[in-house]
Length: 74
Image (cartoon, rainbow, N blue to C red; front, top):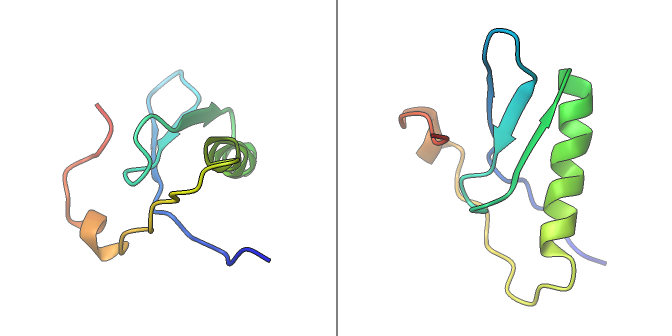
């Protein structure tokens, strides 16, 4: 059984747009949804798809590393 890993998630929303999200620890893993509940599910699915079959799974960074950082997404 795989252990549960929690990755920091950067979430944003612009006027007239869906919520967007990216994972600072997983470059290239991005997702979007119209509401936060759907975003949670979409983020989980995006990570699972990215990590499927991967032997070298990155270790999540501490959330404190990102709370004072400038927004991660461009």
